[in-house]
Image (cartoon, rainbow, N blue to C red):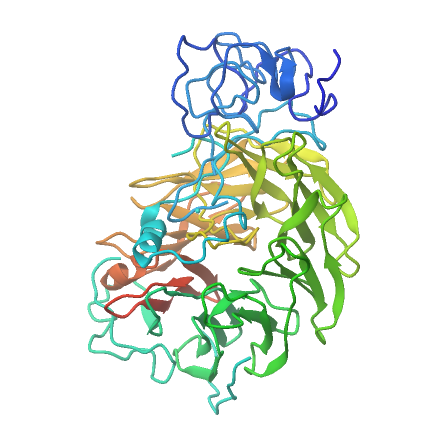
Length: 612
Protein backbone atom coordinates (compact mmCIF):
# COMPACT_ATOMS: atom_id res chain seq x y z
CA UNK A 1 0.00 0.00 0.00
CA UNK A 2 1.14 3.56 -0.48
CA UNK A 3 2.47 5.49 2.47
CA UNK A 4 0.41 8.41 3.80
CA UNK A 5 2.11 11.80 3.64
CA UNK A 6 4.89 12.39 6.17
CA UNK A 7 4.89 8.74 7.18
CA UNK A 8 7.97 6.54 7.55
CA UNK A 9 8.61 3.99 4.83
CA UNK A 10 7.85 0.31 5.41
CA UNK A 11 10.13 -1.36 7.89
CA UNK A 12 10.12 1.51 10.35
CA UNK A 13 8.07 2.17 13.45
CA UNK A 14 4.58 1.00 12.71
CA UNK A 15 5.23 -0.28 9.23
CA UNK A 16 3.37 -3.50 8.36
CA UNK A 17 5.52 -6.56 8.56
CA UNK A 18 4.80 -10.25 8.36
CA UNK A 19 1.53 -11.96 9.30
CA UNK A 20 0.99 -12.11 13.05
CA UNK A 21 2.72 -14.86 14.93
CA UNK A 22 2.23 -15.84 18.52
CA UNK A 23 4.70 -13.98 20.64
CA UNK A 24 4.60 -11.70 23.63
CA UNK A 25 5.52 -8.11 23.19
CA UNK A 26 4.73 -4.68 24.44
CA UNK A 27 2.72 -2.64 22.08
CA UNK A 28 0.69 -5.16 20.18
CA UNK A 29 -3.06 -4.83 19.90
CA UNK A 30 -4.87 -7.34 21.92
CA UNK A 31 -8.55 -8.12 21.94
CA UNK A 32 -11.25 -6.04 20.28
CA UNK A 33 -11.73 -2.83 22.24
CA UNK A 34 -14.72 -2.48 24.53
CA UNK A 35 -17.50 -0.01 23.80
CA UNK A 36 -15.79 2.58 25.92
CA UNK A 37 -12.01 2.70 26.04
CA UNK A 38 -10.60 1.47 29.33
CA UNK A 39 -8.48 3.84 31.36
CA UNK A 40 -4.83 3.87 30.48
CA UNK A 41 -2.61 1.73 32.65
CA UNK A 42 1.12 1.47 33.17
CA UNK A 43 3.01 0.58 30.10
CA UNK A 44 -0.11 -0.12 28.12
CA UNK A 45 -0.85 2.66 25.70
CA UNK A 46 -4.51 3.24 24.97
CA UNK A 47 -5.65 1.26 21.97
CA UNK A 48 -8.56 1.67 19.62
CA UNK A 49 -10.63 -0.52 17.40
CA UNK A 50 -8.93 -1.68 14.26
CA UNK A 51 -8.49 1.36 12.04
CA UNK A 52 -5.59 3.30 10.66
CA UNK A 53 -2.49 1.94 12.37
CA UNK A 54 0.60 3.76 13.54
CA UNK A 55 1.48 6.69 11.40
CA UNK A 56 -1.89 6.59 9.68
CA UNK A 57 -1.65 3.14 8.17
CA UNK A 58 -4.60 0.77 8.27
CA UNK A 59 -4.35 -2.11 10.69
CA UNK A 60 -2.75 -4.96 8.80
CA UNK A 61 -0.89 -8.07 9.76
CA UNK A 62 2.72 -7.46 10.63
CA UNK A 63 4.77 -6.22 13.56
CA UNK A 64 3.39 -3.05 15.02
CA UNK A 65 0.07 -3.44 13.20
CA UNK A 66 -1.34 -6.90 13.19
CA UNK A 67 -4.98 -7.83 13.38
CA UNK A 68 -6.07 -8.26 16.96
CA UNK A 69 -7.66 -11.56 17.81
CA UNK A 70 -8.63 -12.96 21.13
CA UNK A 71 -6.09 -15.26 22.67
CA UNK A 72 -3.67 -14.85 19.82
CA UNK A 73 -0.09 -13.85 20.52
CA UNK A 74 1.64 -11.68 17.99
CA UNK A 75 2.76 -8.17 17.37
CA UNK A 76 -0.05 -5.76 17.86
CA UNK A 77 -2.53 -8.56 18.01
CA UNK A 78 -1.76 -10.58 21.08
CA UNK A 79 -3.40 -11.21 24.36
CA UNK A 80 -2.59 -8.69 27.07
CA UNK A 81 1.15 -8.58 26.90
CA UNK A 82 3.71 -5.81 26.82
CA UNK A 83 5.19 -4.76 23.48
CA UNK A 84 7.90 -2.33 22.44
CA UNK A 85 6.93 1.23 21.77
CA UNK A 86 3.30 0.55 22.36
CA UNK A 87 2.18 -0.54 25.70
CA UNK A 88 -1.04 0.91 26.81
CA UNK A 89 -1.93 1.42 30.39
CA UNK A 90 -5.34 -0.13 29.73
CA UNK A 91 -6.84 -3.47 28.94
CA UNK A 92 -5.32 -4.88 25.80
CA UNK A 93 -7.04 -3.62 22.69
CA UNK A 94 -6.06 -3.41 19.09
CA UNK A 95 -4.36 -0.23 18.07
CA UNK A 96 -1.13 1.10 16.71
CA UNK A 97 1.71 0.62 19.07
CA UNK A 98 -0.75 -0.66 21.57
CA UNK A 99 1.27 -2.41 24.16
CA UNK A 100 0.90 -3.88 27.54
CA UNK A 101 2.49 -3.45 30.88
CA UNK A 102 5.59 -1.39 30.78
CA UNK A 103 8.66 -0.84 32.77
CA UNK A 104 10.70 2.06 33.32
CA UNK A 105 15.42 5.73 33.13
CA UNK A 106 14.66 6.44 36.18
CA UNK A 107 13.83 5.25 39.22
CA UNK A 108 13.70 6.92 42.52
CA UNK A 109 11.20 9.14 44.06
CA UNK A 110 8.89 9.37 41.10
CA UNK A 111 8.12 6.05 39.55
CA UNK A 112 8.41 5.75 35.87
CA UNK A 113 6.58 3.79 33.26
CA UNK A 114 8.06 0.85 31.55
CA UNK A 115 7.88 -0.43 28.07
CA UNK A 116 8.72 -3.68 26.40
CA UNK A 117 9.02 -4.35 22.75
CA UNK A 118 7.69 -7.45 21.13
CA UNK A 119 9.64 -9.84 19.07
CA UNK A 120 9.34 -9.38 15.39
CA UNK A 121 9.92 -5.64 15.55
CA UNK A 122 12.34 -4.79 12.81
CA UNK A 123 15.60 -3.13 13.67
CA UNK A 124 16.68 0.08 12.11
CA UNK A 125 15.65 3.67 12.21
CA UNK A 126 11.93 3.61 12.39
CA UNK A 127 11.53 0.80 14.86
CA UNK A 128 9.17 1.89 17.60
CA UNK A 129 10.25 1.79 21.19
CA UNK A 130 8.98 -0.97 23.44
CA UNK A 131 6.81 -0.62 26.51
CA UNK A 132 8.00 0.87 29.68
CA UNK A 133 7.77 3.94 31.71
CA UNK A 134 10.55 6.41 31.46
CA UNK A 135 12.44 7.97 34.19
CA UNK A 136 11.86 11.61 34.44
CA UNK A 137 10.30 13.69 31.73
CA UNK A 138 12.25 15.12 28.85
CA UNK A 139 15.60 15.86 30.41
CA UNK A 140 16.10 19.49 29.64
CA UNK A 141 12.74 20.22 28.16
CA UNK A 142 11.36 21.80 31.31
CA UNK A 143 14.49 23.38 32.59
CA UNK A 144 13.04 26.88 32.57
CA UNK A 145 11.44 25.99 35.86
CA UNK A 146 14.34 26.90 38.08
CA UNK A 147 12.80 27.83 41.36
CA UNK A 148 10.61 25.24 43.00
CA UNK A 149 9.34 25.54 46.54
CA UNK A 150 11.24 23.38 48.99
CA UNK A 151 8.04 21.63 49.94
CA UNK A 152 7.36 20.68 46.33
CA UNK A 153 10.90 19.46 45.90
CA UNK A 154 10.60 17.36 49.00
CA UNK A 155 7.47 15.76 47.63
CA UNK A 156 9.25 14.99 44.39
CA UNK A 157 12.12 13.41 46.21
CA UNK A 158 9.91 11.14 48.22
CA UNK A 159 7.35 10.69 45.51
CA UNK A 160 8.28 7.49 43.80
CA UNK A 161 10.39 5.70 41.27
CA UNK A 162 10.66 5.64 37.55
CA UNK A 163 9.51 2.72 35.52
CA UNK A 164 11.12 0.68 32.85
CA UNK A 165 9.70 -0.59 29.64
CA UNK A 166 8.10 -3.77 30.68
CA UNK A 167 5.02 -3.26 32.75
CA UNK A 168 2.75 -0.30 33.27
CA UNK A 169 2.86 3.32 34.27
CA UNK A 170 2.00 4.08 37.93
CA UNK A 171 12.25 10.01 38.11
CA UNK A 172 36.77 28.80 40.69
CA UNK A 173 37.13 28.43 44.21
CA UNK A 174 40.04 28.29 46.51
CA UNK A 175 41.44 25.46 48.49
CA UNK A 176 44.85 24.04 49.20
CA UNK A 177 46.16 20.62 49.99
CA UNK A 178 46.23 19.59 53.62
CA UNK A 179 48.89 17.56 55.39
CA UNK A 180 46.51 14.63 55.84
CA UNK A 181 47.95 11.38 54.52
CA UNK A 182 45.21 8.89 55.27
CA UNK A 183 43.20 7.77 52.25
CA UNK A 184 40.73 4.88 51.73
CA UNK A 185 37.20 3.83 52.68
CA UNK A 186 16.68 2.88 58.12
CA UNK A 187 15.53 2.78 60.94
CA UNK A 188 16.40 4.02 64.19
CA UNK A 189 19.35 6.17 65.22
CA UNK A 190 19.40 9.91 65.23
CA UNK A 191 22.16 11.58 63.25
CA UNK A 192 25.11 12.90 65.25
CA UNK A 193 26.08 16.52 65.00
CA UNK A 194 28.73 16.60 62.29
CA UNK A 195 29.48 19.59 60.06
CA UNK A 196 30.54 17.27 57.25
CA UNK A 197 33.79 19.11 56.63
CA UNK A 198 36.04 16.18 57.46
CA UNK A 199 37.69 17.96 60.35
CA UNK A 200 36.90 15.22 62.86
CA UNK A 201 37.34 11.48 62.98
CA UNK A 202 34.13 10.62 61.17
CA UNK A 203 32.27 9.68 64.35
CA UNK A 204 31.64 13.13 65.83
CA UNK A 205 28.47 13.67 67.78
CA UNK A 206 26.64 12.65 70.89
CA UNK A 207 25.85 9.15 69.73
CA UNK A 208 27.94 6.09 68.94
CA UNK A 209 26.51 4.79 65.67
CA UNK A 210 28.10 1.39 66.27
CA UNK A 211 26.58 0.92 69.71
CA UNK A 212 24.49 -2.24 69.83
CA UNK A 213 25.96 -3.59 66.60
CA UNK A 214 25.10 -7.29 66.27
CA UNK A 215 27.40 -10.12 65.25
CA UNK A 216 27.78 -10.30 61.48
CA UNK A 217 26.78 -6.68 60.95
CA UNK A 218 29.12 -4.25 59.22
CA UNK A 219 30.28 -1.22 61.15
CA UNK A 220 29.72 2.43 60.41
CA UNK A 221 33.10 3.68 59.21
CA UNK A 222 31.97 7.30 59.28
CA UNK A 223 28.99 9.55 58.72
CA UNK A 224 28.86 13.16 57.44
CA UNK A 225 26.12 15.72 57.60
CA UNK A 226 25.62 18.23 54.81
CA UNK A 227 26.58 21.89 54.93
CA UNK A 228 23.79 24.33 55.67
CA UNK A 229 21.95 25.53 52.57
CA UNK A 230 19.44 28.33 51.94
CA UNK A 231 15.71 27.73 51.64
CA UNK A 232 16.00 26.89 47.95
CA UNK A 233 18.35 23.99 48.77
CA UNK A 234 21.48 22.98 46.93
CA UNK A 235 22.78 20.31 44.57
CA UNK A 236 25.28 17.63 45.58
CA UNK A 237 26.13 15.90 42.27
CA UNK A 238 28.75 13.23 41.89
CA UNK A 239 30.63 10.87 44.18
CA UNK A 240 34.12 9.80 43.10
CA UNK A 241 36.14 7.04 44.79
CA UNK A 242 39.83 6.72 44.02
CA UNK A 243 42.04 4.52 46.18
CA UNK A 244 41.99 5.93 49.71
CA UNK A 245 39.92 9.00 48.86
CA UNK A 246 36.24 9.60 48.25
CA UNK A 247 35.26 13.04 46.94
CA UNK A 248 31.81 14.58 47.19
CA UNK A 249 30.30 17.82 45.84
CA UNK A 250 27.97 19.64 48.24
CA UNK A 251 26.31 23.00 47.55
CA UNK A 252 29.36 25.29 47.11
CA UNK A 253 32.07 22.87 48.20
CA UNK A 254 34.07 19.92 47.00
CA UNK A 255 34.93 17.70 50.00
CA UNK A 256 37.46 14.87 50.21
CA UNK A 257 37.51 12.15 52.90
CA UNK A 258 39.65 9.18 53.79
CA UNK A 259 37.57 6.13 52.89
CA UNK A 260 38.38 4.25 56.10
CA UNK A 261 38.27 6.99 58.71
CA UNK A 262 36.29 9.86 57.25
CA UNK A 263 39.12 12.26 58.06
CA UNK A 264 39.84 15.07 55.66
CA UNK A 265 41.99 13.98 52.70
CA UNK A 266 42.62 17.45 51.29
CA UNK A 267 41.26 20.86 52.18
CA UNK A 268 37.77 21.58 50.90
CA UNK A 269 37.50 23.63 47.73
CA UNK A 270 34.91 26.37 48.07
CA UNK A 271 33.35 27.84 44.93
CA UNK A 272 32.00 31.40 44.77
CA UNK A 273 28.51 30.21 43.79
CA UNK A 274 26.36 27.07 43.84
CA UNK A 275 27.65 23.91 42.18
CA UNK A 276 25.19 23.02 39.43
CA UNK A 277 26.78 20.10 37.52
CA UNK A 278 29.71 17.68 37.58
CA UNK A 279 31.11 14.90 35.45
CA UNK A 280 29.82 11.46 36.46
CA UNK A 281 33.25 9.90 36.01
CA UNK A 282 36.91 10.95 36.08
CA UNK A 283 39.57 10.88 33.39
CA UNK A 284 42.27 8.21 33.38
CA UNK A 285 44.57 10.61 35.24
CA UNK A 286 41.84 11.20 37.88
CA UNK A 287 40.56 14.62 36.85
CA UNK A 288 36.93 15.70 37.19
CA UNK A 289 35.09 18.86 36.13
CA UNK A 290 32.69 20.83 38.31
CA UNK A 291 30.36 23.55 36.99
CA UNK A 292 29.04 26.36 39.17
CA UNK A 293 26.70 29.30 38.70
CA UNK A 294 27.96 32.60 37.30
CA UNK A 295 26.10 34.52 40.02
CA UNK A 296 23.65 34.27 42.88
CA UNK A 297 20.72 35.97 41.18
CA UNK A 298 17.69 34.01 40.05
CA UNK A 299 18.27 32.64 36.56
CA UNK A 300 22.07 32.71 36.80
CA UNK A 301 23.66 30.53 34.14
CA UNK A 302 25.48 27.29 34.98
CA UNK A 303 28.53 28.09 32.86
CA UNK A 304 31.64 28.35 35.06
CA UNK A 305 33.95 25.31 34.78
CA UNK A 306 36.74 24.10 37.06
CA UNK A 307 39.00 21.06 36.66
CA UNK A 308 40.04 19.35 39.92
CA UNK A 309 42.55 16.55 40.61
CA UNK A 310 40.84 13.90 42.78
CA UNK A 311 44.11 12.69 44.27
CA UNK A 312 45.46 16.03 45.47
CA UNK A 313 42.68 18.58 45.39
CA UNK A 314 44.77 20.74 43.06
CA UNK A 315 42.83 22.84 40.57
CA UNK A 316 43.56 22.74 36.86
CA UNK A 317 42.20 25.12 34.26
CA UNK A 318 38.96 26.97 34.84
CA UNK A 319 36.89 29.01 32.38
CA UNK A 320 33.39 30.16 31.49
CA UNK A 321 31.62 28.65 28.49
CA UNK A 322 29.40 30.86 26.35
CA UNK A 323 25.94 30.11 25.01
CA UNK A 324 25.52 29.73 21.25
CA UNK A 325 22.69 31.73 19.71
CA UNK A 326 19.70 33.71 20.92
CA UNK A 327 17.68 30.80 22.28
CA UNK A 328 20.52 28.78 23.76
CA UNK A 329 20.65 28.59 27.54
CA UNK A 330 22.78 27.06 30.26
CA UNK A 331 20.41 27.47 33.16
CA UNK A 332 21.35 23.83 33.65
CA UNK A 333 24.31 22.06 32.06
CA UNK A 334 25.41 18.50 31.37
CA UNK A 335 29.07 17.54 31.56
CA UNK A 336 29.99 14.41 29.60
CA UNK A 337 33.53 12.96 29.52
CA UNK A 338 34.88 10.77 26.73
CA UNK A 339 38.62 10.23 26.97
CA UNK A 340 40.33 13.62 26.80
CA UNK A 341 37.17 15.39 25.61
CA UNK A 342 34.64 17.23 27.79
CA UNK A 343 31.24 18.00 26.26
CA UNK A 344 29.42 20.87 27.96
CA UNK A 345 25.77 20.45 27.04
CA UNK A 346 23.19 23.25 27.18
CA UNK A 347 19.57 23.73 26.10
CA UNK A 348 20.21 23.87 22.36
CA UNK A 349 23.92 23.28 21.80
CA UNK A 350 27.10 21.85 23.25
CA UNK A 351 30.73 22.91 23.47
CA UNK A 352 33.51 20.32 23.25
CA UNK A 353 36.70 21.15 25.16
CA UNK A 354 40.02 19.35 25.43
CA UNK A 355 40.49 18.19 29.02
CA UNK A 356 44.27 18.62 29.00
CA UNK A 357 44.17 22.39 28.44
CA UNK A 358 40.55 23.54 28.06
CA UNK A 359 40.94 24.36 24.37
CA UNK A 360 37.66 24.49 22.42
CA UNK A 361 37.44 21.72 19.81
CA UNK A 362 34.03 22.38 18.21
CA UNK A 363 30.42 23.41 18.83
CA UNK A 364 27.55 20.92 18.50
CA UNK A 365 24.90 23.13 16.90
CA UNK A 366 21.52 22.95 15.24
CA UNK A 367 21.35 21.11 11.95
CA UNK A 368 19.05 20.93 8.94
CA UNK A 369 18.61 24.68 8.73
CA UNK A 370 17.77 24.93 12.40
CA UNK A 371 15.05 22.28 12.49
CA UNK A 372 17.04 19.98 14.80
CA UNK A 373 18.88 21.11 17.91
CA UNK A 374 20.86 19.21 20.57
CA UNK A 375 19.04 18.61 23.85
CA UNK A 376 21.09 16.02 25.68
CA UNK A 377 24.57 14.44 25.85
CA UNK A 378 26.00 11.29 27.42
CA UNK A 379 29.60 10.18 27.75
CA UNK A 380 31.66 7.20 28.84
CA UNK A 381 32.93 4.79 26.21
CA UNK A 382 31.33 6.89 23.47
CA UNK A 383 29.77 10.33 23.00
CA UNK A 384 26.01 10.33 22.31
CA UNK A 385 23.82 13.33 21.52
CA UNK A 386 20.01 13.52 21.54
CA UNK A 387 18.33 15.92 19.12
CA UNK A 388 14.86 17.46 19.04
CA UNK A 389 13.65 18.05 15.48
CA UNK A 390 10.75 19.87 13.86
CA UNK A 391 9.05 20.99 17.05
CA UNK A 392 5.33 21.78 16.56
CA UNK A 393 5.40 20.58 12.94
CA UNK A 394 4.00 17.47 11.24
CA UNK A 395 7.53 16.07 11.02
CA UNK A 396 8.34 16.47 14.73
CA UNK A 397 10.59 13.68 15.97
CA UNK A 398 13.74 12.96 17.99
CA UNK A 399 17.09 11.54 16.96
CA UNK A 400 20.08 9.97 18.66
CA UNK A 401 23.60 10.36 17.25
CA UNK A 402 27.01 9.00 18.08
CA UNK A 403 29.63 11.71 17.60
CA UNK A 404 33.34 11.46 17.01
CA UNK A 405 34.39 13.12 20.28
CA UNK A 406 37.39 14.88 18.73
CA UNK A 407 35.67 16.32 15.65
CA UNK A 408 31.93 16.29 16.39
CA UNK A 409 31.22 14.39 13.18
CA UNK A 410 28.10 12.19 13.36
CA UNK A 411 29.04 8.51 13.02
CA UNK A 412 25.40 7.39 12.79
CA UNK A 413 21.91 8.83 13.35
CA UNK A 414 18.93 6.94 14.74
CA UNK A 415 15.53 8.56 14.02
CA UNK A 416 12.50 7.77 16.15
CA UNK A 417 8.86 8.20 15.08
CA UNK A 418 6.84 11.31 15.80
CA UNK A 419 5.63 11.59 19.36
CA UNK A 420 8.40 9.45 20.87
CA UNK A 421 10.79 11.27 23.19
CA UNK A 422 14.22 10.11 24.28
CA UNK A 423 13.80 10.17 28.05
CA UNK A 424 17.00 8.52 29.23
CA UNK A 425 19.80 6.22 28.23
CA UNK A 426 19.86 3.17 30.49
CA UNK A 427 23.29 2.42 29.06
CA UNK A 428 25.69 4.18 26.70
CA UNK A 429 27.67 1.08 25.68
CA UNK A 430 25.79 -1.08 24.87
CA UNK A 431 23.33 1.63 23.86
CA UNK A 432 19.96 1.14 25.53
CA UNK A 433 17.39 3.90 24.98
CA UNK A 434 14.31 4.56 27.06
CA UNK A 435 11.57 6.38 25.12
CA UNK A 436 8.13 7.64 25.95
CA UNK A 437 5.06 8.79 24.01
CA UNK A 438 3.11 10.97 26.41
CA UNK A 439 0.20 11.61 24.06
CA UNK A 440 -0.46 7.88 23.84
CA UNK A 441 0.79 7.10 27.34
CA UNK A 442 3.26 4.50 26.08
CA UNK A 443 6.88 3.70 26.73
CA UNK A 444 9.62 1.71 25.08
CA UNK A 445 13.13 0.36 25.66
CA UNK A 446 15.22 -0.11 22.53
CA UNK A 447 18.63 -1.77 22.32
CA UNK A 448 20.83 -0.65 19.41
CA UNK A 449 23.49 -2.68 17.66
CA UNK A 450 27.09 -1.77 18.44
CA UNK A 451 28.19 1.46 16.72
CA UNK A 452 25.05 1.49 14.60
CA UNK A 453 21.59 3.03 14.34
CA UNK A 454 20.09 -0.42 13.72
CA UNK A 455 17.77 -1.84 16.36
CA UNK A 456 19.06 -5.01 17.99
CA UNK A 457 15.99 -5.72 20.13
CA UNK A 458 13.17 -4.13 22.08
CA UNK A 459 12.27 -5.17 25.59
CA UNK A 460 9.29 -7.45 26.03
CA UNK A 461 7.94 -7.88 29.54
CA UNK A 462 4.84 -7.66 31.69
CA UNK A 463 6.82 -6.22 34.59
CA UNK A 464 7.00 -2.63 35.69
CA UNK A 465 10.57 -1.55 36.14
CA UNK A 466 11.69 1.13 38.53
CA UNK A 467 15.24 2.39 38.08
CA UNK A 468 15.83 5.75 39.78
CA UNK A 469 16.54 8.37 37.15
CA UNK A 470 16.22 11.71 38.91
CA UNK A 471 14.17 13.52 41.48
CA UNK A 472 13.95 17.11 40.36
CA UNK A 473 12.65 19.22 37.49
CA UNK A 474 16.21 20.32 36.84
CA UNK A 475 17.61 16.82 36.43
CA UNK A 476 18.84 17.06 32.87
CA UNK A 477 21.32 14.20 32.68
CA UNK A 478 20.70 12.00 29.64
CA UNK A 479 22.25 8.99 31.36
CA UNK A 480 22.95 7.87 34.91
CA UNK A 481 19.87 6.04 36.22
CA UNK A 482 20.42 4.27 39.52
CA UNK A 483 19.28 0.66 39.09
CA UNK A 484 19.77 0.38 35.31
CA UNK A 485 22.84 -1.75 34.57
CA UNK A 486 23.98 -3.43 31.35
CA UNK A 487 26.85 -5.67 30.31
CA UNK A 488 27.55 -7.32 26.97
CA UNK A 489 24.74 -9.85 27.35
CA UNK A 490 22.03 -8.49 29.63
CA UNK A 491 20.16 -5.42 30.78
CA UNK A 492 19.41 -5.62 34.52
CA UNK A 493 16.39 -3.72 35.83
CA UNK A 494 14.58 -3.72 39.20
CA UNK A 495 10.85 -4.31 39.21
CA UNK A 496 8.58 -1.88 40.97
CA UNK A 497 7.71 -2.61 44.58
CA UNK A 498 5.44 -0.18 46.40
CA UNK A 499 6.10 -2.24 49.49
CA UNK A 500 7.90 -5.48 50.22
CA UNK A 501 10.37 -7.41 48.09
CA UNK A 502 10.90 -6.96 44.37
CA UNK A 503 12.86 -8.74 41.63
CA UNK A 504 15.85 -7.92 39.49
CA UNK A 505 15.21 -9.08 35.93
CA UNK A 506 18.03 -9.93 33.52
CA UNK A 507 16.85 -9.14 29.99
CA UNK A 508 18.68 -10.56 26.98
CA UNK A 509 20.05 -7.76 24.80
CA UNK A 510 19.82 -10.09 21.81
CA UNK A 511 16.09 -10.86 22.14
CA UNK A 512 14.62 -8.27 24.52
CA UNK A 513 13.13 -11.12 26.56
CA UNK A 514 13.67 -12.12 30.16
CA UNK A 515 16.61 -14.50 30.63
CA UNK A 516 16.35 -14.94 34.40
CA UNK A 517 15.31 -13.13 37.54
CA UNK A 518 16.10 -13.11 41.22
CA UNK A 519 13.97 -12.06 44.15
CA UNK A 520 15.16 -9.73 46.89
CA UNK A 521 16.38 -11.77 49.88
CA UNK A 522 14.57 -9.39 52.26
CA UNK A 523 11.13 -7.86 52.37
CA UNK A 524 12.58 -4.70 50.80
CA UNK A 525 13.41 -3.53 47.28
CA UNK A 526 16.72 -4.50 45.66
CA UNK A 527 18.47 -2.48 42.92
CA UNK A 528 21.41 -3.39 40.65
CA UNK A 529 24.61 -1.34 41.10
CA UNK A 530 27.17 -2.79 38.67
CA UNK A 531 28.70 -5.98 37.32
CA UNK A 532 32.17 -7.21 38.20
CA UNK A 533 34.01 -10.55 38.21
CA UNK A 534 31.10 -12.45 36.70
CA UNK A 535 28.57 -11.21 39.24
CA UNK A 536 25.89 -8.55 39.54
CA UNK A 537 26.38 -6.40 42.66
CA UNK A 538 23.08 -5.18 44.10
CA UNK A 539 21.88 -3.05 47.02
CA UNK A 540 18.99 -4.16 49.21
CA UNK A 541 17.33 -1.13 50.79
CA UNK A 542 16.87 -0.90 54.57
CA UNK A 543 13.59 -1.03 56.44
CA UNK A 544 12.72 0.63 59.72
CA UNK A 545 13.80 -2.43 61.66
CA UNK A 546 16.61 -3.83 59.49
CA UNK A 547 19.68 -2.38 57.84
CA UNK A 548 20.33 -2.56 54.15
CA UNK A 549 22.82 -4.93 52.60
CA UNK A 550 25.06 -5.46 49.60
CA UNK A 551 24.65 -8.77 47.74
CA UNK A 552 26.43 -10.57 44.93
CA UNK A 553 24.40 -12.45 42.30
CA UNK A 554 26.23 -14.86 40.00
CA UNK A 555 25.35 -14.10 36.39
CA UNK A 556 25.59 -17.78 35.49
CA UNK A 557 24.44 -20.52 37.83
CA UNK A 558 21.78 -20.40 40.52
CA UNK A 559 21.59 -16.57 40.73
CA UNK A 560 21.11 -16.84 44.47
CA UNK A 561 22.00 -13.57 46.27
CA UNK A 562 25.01 -13.91 48.59
CA UNK A 563 25.50 -11.24 51.25
CA UNK A 564 28.72 -9.25 50.98
CA UNK A 565 27.91 -6.62 53.62
CA UNK A 566 25.06 -6.57 56.16
CA UNK A 567 24.45 -3.03 57.40
CA UNK A 568 23.60 -2.52 61.08
CA UNK A 569 20.01 -2.13 62.19
CA UNK A 570 20.96 0.79 64.42
CA UNK A 571 21.56 3.18 61.51
CA UNK A 572 18.74 2.02 59.26
CA UNK A 573 16.83 5.23 59.88
CA UNK A 574 19.75 7.34 58.69
CA UNK A 575 20.40 5.03 55.73
CA UNK A 576 16.77 5.03 54.60
CA UNK A 577 16.72 8.84 54.76
CA UNK A 578 18.84 9.19 51.62
CA UNK A 579 16.07 9.72 49.07
CA UNK A 580 17.94 11.24 46.14
CA UNK A 581 21.18 9.31 46.24
CA UNK A 582 24.39 7.95 44.80
CA UNK A 583 25.59 4.52 45.96
CA UNK A 584 28.70 2.45 45.32
CA UNK A 585 30.50 -0.62 46.65
CA UNK A 586 34.29 -0.52 46.33
CA UNK A 587 36.95 -2.68 48.01
CA UNK A 588 34.51 -4.12 50.56
CA UNK A 589 33.08 -0.73 51.58
CA UNK A 590 29.62 0.66 50.79
CA UNK A 591 29.01 4.37 50.30
CA UNK A 592 25.71 6.21 50.12
CA UNK A 593 25.43 9.97 49.59
CA UNK A 594 22.75 12.50 48.76
CA UNK A 595 22.53 14.25 45.39
CA UNK A 596 20.26 17.02 46.61
CA UNK A 597 20.49 18.92 49.90
CA UNK A 598 17.19 20.20 51.21
CA UNK A 599 16.91 23.12 53.59
CA UNK A 600 15.75 21.73 56.94
CA UNK A 601 15.43 22.90 60.51
CA UNK A 602 17.90 20.18 61.47
CA UNK A 603 21.01 18.86 59.79
CA UNK A 604 20.68 17.25 56.36
CA UNK A 605 22.52 14.02 55.53
CA UNK A 606 25.51 14.04 53.19
CA UNK A 607 27.35 10.68 53.29
CA UNK A 608 27.48 7.38 55.16
CA UNK A 609 30.13 4.66 54.80
CA UNK A 610 30.02 1.03 55.98
CA UNK A 611 32.77 -1.58 56.10
CA UNK A 612 34.05 -4.59 58.01
